[in-house]
Length: 543
Ligand SMILES: *[C@@H]1O[C@H](CO)[C@@H](O)[C@H](O)[C@H]1NC(C)=O
Ligand SMILES: *[C@@H]1O[C@H](CO)[C@@H](O)[C@H](O)[C@H]1NC(C)=O
Ligand SMILES: *[C@@H]1O[C@H](CO)[C@@H](O)[C@H](O)[C@H]1NC(C)=O
Ligand SMILES: *[C@@H]1O[C@H](CO)[C@@H](O)[C@H](O)[C@H]1NC(C)=O
Ligand SMILES: *[C@@H]1O[C@H](CO)[C@@H](O)[C@H](O)[C@H]1NC(C)=O
Ligand SMILES: *[C@@H]1O[C@H](CO)[C@@H](O)[C@H](O)[C@H]1NC(C)=O
Ligand SMILES: *[C@@H]1O[C@H](CO)[C@@H](O)[C@H](O)[C@H]1NC(C)=O
Ligand SMILES: *[C@@H]1O[C@H](CO)[C@@H](O)[C@H](O)[C@H]1NC(C)=O
Ligand SMILES: *[C@@H]1O[C@H](CO)[C@@H](O)[C@H](O)[C@H]1NC(C)=O
Ligand SMILES: *[C@@H]1O[C@H](CO)[C@@H](O)[C@H](O)[C@H]1NC(C)=O
Ligand SMILES: *[C@@H]1O[C@H](CO)[C@@H](O)[C@H](O)[C@H]1NC(C)=O
Ligand SMILES: *[C@@H]1O[C@H](CO)[C@@H](O)[C@H](O)[C@H]1NC(C)=O
Ligand SMILES: [Cu+2]
Image (cartoon, rainbow, N blue to C red; front, side, top):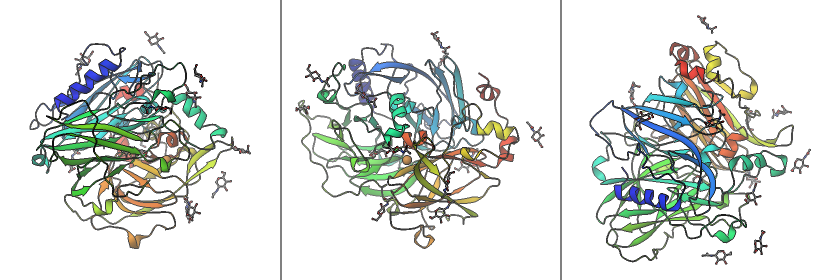
């Protein structure tokens, strides 16, 4: 759980900063676990989505908010609970809420991918997602409609495990949401990106945020903006002698960050819901949509220390002149005095850029024998101009086109077995072990996410190498749900198709989703049809 003090401080700061925030305390903001031992509760959250003028970094802009907050309320469940999300769409446009990393076993229609597993929630309508959470770890939720999540429809989702093997090894939990931040609205940026003039160069962020906060030098803002320099940074309170489990979630649209806390090593214990053996690091590279838990000991002299989240601008093609890539927050020990900023220094060991944390050094908490593959799917990723000269993302020479009125899952229920080429559907009829071999022919790296599953990370290769089964790890690889393929490189991951549904596999860079770097696995369609889908779900496509 987030320490009460920190939460309170964040909320107070949000109120101070944003006069538009209504002064009623969001009723469902429940950061504390009711009871770790009580299994199979139903946890209910109301999520009301609106537009608001807010200033996360001192620059006021119209953006989205959930229950008047940004980031959205922290959702917490225990493994085994049923989570009910009542989503109220108070926008003048459609929306949707995807629970990233949730397996949705038996409820594949609640995975929320417009065009694949549902129709959007229309303006002024509500919709309830309800599913059992039979997994634990660090997750997040976000809109899967257009590029809405990068403008505020985002929050953390934590599934606690009463049997977590590390439970006794830390005192408190802290959620750290890291993201990039744009001052323009996403519709404008998207229209610009999806035009021939962009040449496929992504919009680059104006700033980065930690738990929705940062400061900005307003001399970079256009004339006439409502902008206050020196907005406060996020502040994390430590008590000397305590140990903290920090759950770090990267909810960026585009930028990769390297996370660190001066003078405080971190022990990785969880990667995307999968527990690992302790592994000590100084820097944590964390790409879009990835999550890690680390244990940090407050074992340094009482004082203040920088938390750093450095945007890897080396991976950008262009960048804004006014961007300060070093996003900071303050770790403040109880008992440290004064209002001075920390004067701590960054770790000096060098760090490779634009690739994932080298997970070959990470070991699963429990090593289990992994099954052999039944077959292999090869996916070639390219970016090319389409017939309108707009640069788009392609998988095996096919760019995905969203069919928002007729999601694939509805077609499956109508006994359709063939799909248009531009739907990038790959059907897996049986419960099988599948290897994805992905070749990246692009000059950028791409964080790929598979819905409804975790996969074993067998191997990753950089530019200049080719997929090679002789160099992969089939003995004790970790599992996760989001992985970065290096520029010009490759990866091999393995998953078991035993979860009937329609599961998106896509790059999580939001600009690349919108430019078609998306495909879908239809797994066990006969089993999908055995599942009774709810009427309110199919009715979404009638409005
Ligand atoms: C959700 O909203 C409904 C209807 O307004 C209300 O009855 C219920 O108490 C709310 N639940 C929570 C957990 O806020
Ligand atoms: C949604 O409700 C608001 C307020 O009642 C109304 O002004 C708006 O026109 C409605 N929008 C749609 C698309 O129905
Ligand atoms: C819950 O997960 C466990 C292991 O992760 C699995 O063995 C079990 O079958 C799952 N139960 C359900 C109802 O999905
Ligand atoms: C972003 O906003 C700034 C100022 O509001 C404007 O100058 C700039 O042209 C905008 N960029 C795009 C791509 O619309
Ligand atoms: C496509 O767009 C690029 C970048 O704007 C431009 O250089 C090129 O001439 C265009 N090609 C065609 C065939 O229009
Ligand atoms: C803000 O940017 C301006 C122009 O680049 C610079 O002169 C000024 O020193 C900056 N202010 C701070 C506090 O960094
Ligand atoms: C902003 O206003 C200042 C002072 O009025 C002026 O010097 C400057 O040229 C303006 N900048 C832009 C981009 O309009
Ligand atoms: C989050 O992901 C983005 C996009 O890949 C990346 O640029 C950024 O550096 C990541 N953040 C951290 C803290 O690693
Ligand atoms: C993918 O690229 C590899 C290497 O160039 C090539 O051998 C293979 O045929 C391609 N596969 C597909 C499905 O296009
Ligand atoms: C990709 O598709 C385009 C147009 O559909 C075609 O001209 C081109 O030859 C294809 N490339 C490959 C490698 O199959
Ligand atoms: C789909 O096929 C099944 C079995 O062949 C049949 O019972 C069912 O009516 C069909 N459904 C539709 C919507 O055609
Ligand atoms: C891979 O490396 C080669 C040789 O250094 C370089 O020419 C090429 O541009 C690189 N490819 C990518 C996709 O980065
Ligand atoms: Cu991408």
